[in-house]
Image (cartoon, rainbow, N blue to C red; front, side):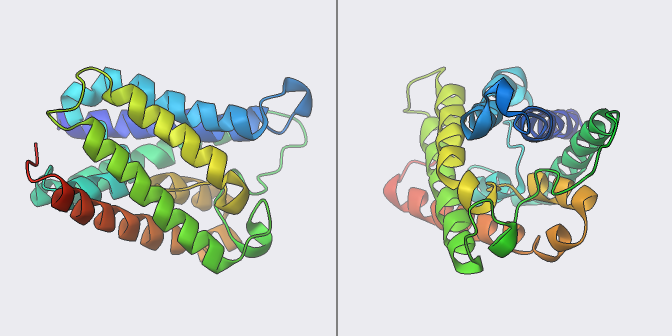
Amino acid sequence: MKKLVAEFIGTLWLVLGGCGSAVLAAAYPDLGIGFVGVSLAFGLTVVTMAYAIGHISGCHLNPAVSIGLWMGGRFDAKELPSYIMAQVLGGIAGAGILYLIASGKSGFEVGDFAANGYGKNSPGGYDMFSALVTEIVMTFMFLIIILGATHSKAPAGFAGLAIGLGLVLIHLISIPVTNTSVNPARSTSQAIFAGGWALQQLWLFWVAPIVGAILAGITYKFMSPENE
């Protein structure tokens, strides 16, 4: 239960910090955070939580990460359902808090609420195929970074930084394409509030990250005979 509470809080913070920066700050050009600021915000949530709860739950914060770690031989399959549930609920809680804050401004409209999308709902107008490739490849690389940085032979104490900076880079690349998911819990939390098209396109932001994570788990296990 302690692990699940940690995953709930960590994923809440990921959504509130990352999506919150997009909804509350990026919409105001004079604040100057833009895509770069949002990218940094997502990375910072992971860095802070890695050192806060990494020793409790492993700081997955993402169903795709849990699945990728399982495929890589680092996580017990029997814990997957409970971890994924805690992550999704934590993400929804974070989105709920964000909604309570954002709706306190006069004239507030939900809009896309930092949801992920493709086609006309892609920030850069990229189609479904581009979104699918982007999410698979970005999640694949994210899991390669995680599996490598947390390996017993990796430099000790730096995993959180490597993973957080990796997520910053992923956002810098893919925000224009899909608004960056690589995390089904993050995508679900925002789609629930955005509704409509966001819920209709949510399938891609479950399927693609999970495919990318599975491929990464298999690949890293092949490259590194020692799993720990």
